[in-house]
Image (tube, rainbow, N blue to C red; front, side, top):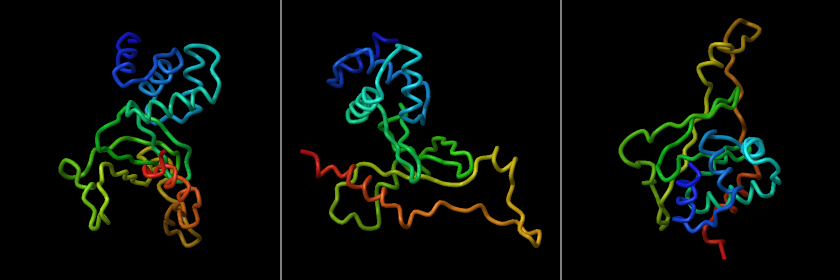
Length: 176
């Protein structure tokens, strides 16, 4: 596997290191893992590696399009090996489980907004929020005082200043 992976890194102009090989393997084996999840897996594979080295490798691999970074609101960044297609994600509000879901209709309908404001759009990130089947089975709803089912609270995004910070961090025009 490492020979093929090393060739893949070289093909994308990435210097081959044991850390990068291990990070790429960990992301491929653990879709939607956090940087901490990846670091734990890499340490089990190669031994000592700093948290910064893991973040650096994740950054390089994401910049080169070898992995995808997903930043759901109110959640740490997650990483997956499925990159380069227009798939989206379902996230459980109760347990945080994340699964892939293909684009709903056509090749990439979400790439055509009502108003593109002159932008050339090349990617859309859609996240569906709800509850997974397991959480629905274990807790179908919370009963209120009158016996009626009360909806599960939603995560508020109104005052999420990190949204603005993430938007700035992903703005391609700010790159030197």
